[in-house]
Length: 76
Image (tube, rainbow, N blue to C red):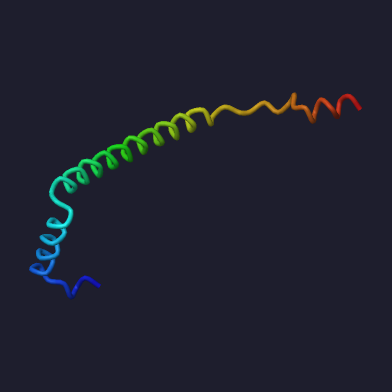
């Protein structure tokens, strides 16, 4: 799809985009993109920590002896 576009054509498009939007908007776009990547990375590390915490607790067995269903069966 982009194989027909050469470097000079891409440079012309970049100059036109800079002329329309200005450099200030591109600077803010770069910082916003950086903050988004930083937020994504922190969310990924939080998710990994939560996964490790859950896997650490998975060795314990659940106690199903005194569930409400079992108590109702004993009464009848």
